[in-house]
Image 1 (tube, rainbow, N blue to C red):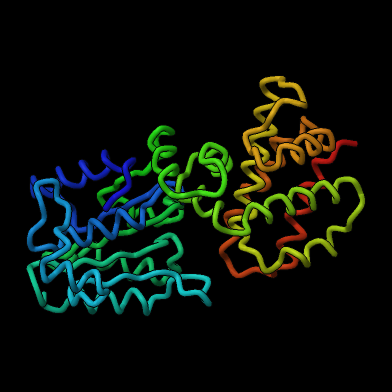
Image 2 (cartoon, rainbow, N blue to C red; image 1 turned 120 degrees about the vertical axis):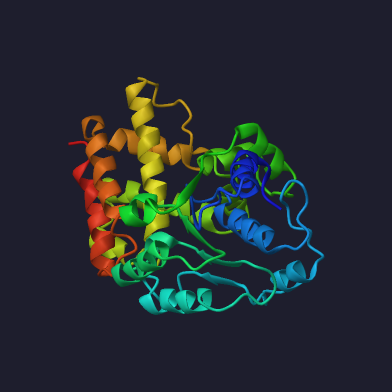
Length: 326
């Protein structure tokens, strides 16, 4: 089933399907943590289901649904970034292309999903483009991405796009309240920037502890109590995209306070590190906050590329030192 906040996106898909205007390629785009991958799986199952209901939802009990749920459907394939790889390879896309050229085993459709589509290398992207330009009949390719601008414009132009925005707060809170959380749904949602799946992930992991530790490390760095070279060694094995997304969110919080001329002691949006943000506010030069934000944003574009990890973290920390109040 789709999430409660995805009703409008589902209606968009269903209208295209029922009017026979569904494109051979769908592009699901939007921020991480809003359920795009789950939505893509339901769309795929719906397209393959033999007895979908009036709302287009898969029946979950026909032969097609049974084999889909057992991850053995002969007319379905998915591709994701492999754990030990930096990108989706051309061979992965070629395998999908060969699969799409085969005859259908069950119904009249074949469906493939490409998760993290923005992580295709250039060769893979160009290989997919050829497939999109000359699609096999009765096939649907579903691309899922949180970085739509990283996809080739020629790929984007050949897809029917479905955009996922930050869910309505009421819908998100209601769903989170049903998930047996340890922490407050409101607090988690605030920390997660309105993204309910990320909020749930924060509740059941060590990420909250890591967030606080990183904020404290930045304070120690700006206070001159730690060295950026030594500090970098503690963070080189972490997910750089995650680290940078936290810092960008914190910088936005600091900017909001500065722009609105809010008092230093007023609470920040990141409720889990309010104390740390108040300290950072005192240590940073307000006039350099925009430059801090832009510099971190430029780094996030390189976070998924093969880089020297130590040097990358050192650069990240130096950006904060450059914003230090003199």
